[in-house]
Length: 61
Image (cartoon, rainbow, N blue to C red; front, side):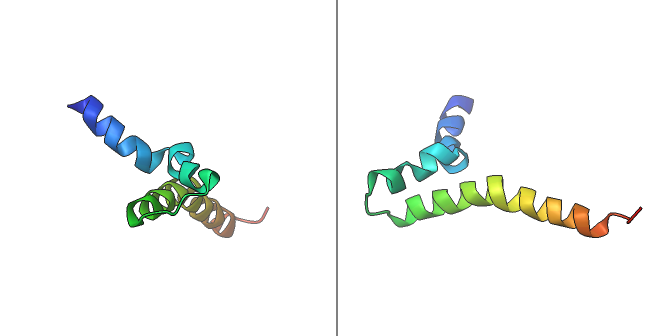
């Protein structure tokens, strides 16, 4: 059961799998757009927000 869950979530978390339809020039469905957005948020958005927060709250020495 864990393997099935992993395979289902792999398309949502793996950036390469989520962005493959863009590289192939296919018309994207709503699910494919959601997968690309989710992987982008996980791998770009969250680290960006954490980094900005750390820079803004750091004490100037």
